[in-house]
Length: 111
Length: 116
Image (tube, rainbow over all chains, first blue to last red; front, side, top):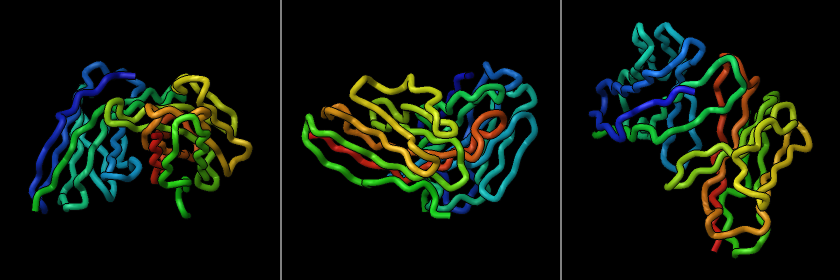
């Protein structure tokens, strides 16, 4: 699976959009981009995933660049409860391999 | 649904003792995963099961660790004998149909193990 690179930490003001970048320059055609988050002392939580097209659900939007070498997770109106570590993961859809979590981005939403 | 249920939530034991962690996956999910999380190594996959059969146990640290899934609604992770370096949060996760485009895992709240 392709390796991802994320900034170790980011801050965001409450009520503003949080834009979390992820670089996956070695991604291959069969690999999906997944985002999970982990709030302190809880298990990781699935947020969203995508292959080529932008995706949106009730939690967030995922913007994938046309060359698929990077993506951005957008939390449109961040709240204090969105403070968490956010993990960007790429995974080959053609295999049953597990998700490999990196070190992620610690997002802190400030009041 | 109650989600993935793990027990105990906290366990403190002494070196050399046997530890058993338990997991009940979400009903209807056919894949189950055990992860371990430490500050130094982050989240690591230990083993995963598909339809109660172990598929990949390459992450199990050593022979002191063993995992079973006797049926679709129950799994255990056992450490015998335990050592201080086993101190970590152990997470269980399940998935309705692992593989292909489905990469959604549902995690439990974790079991925090401290070995003195």
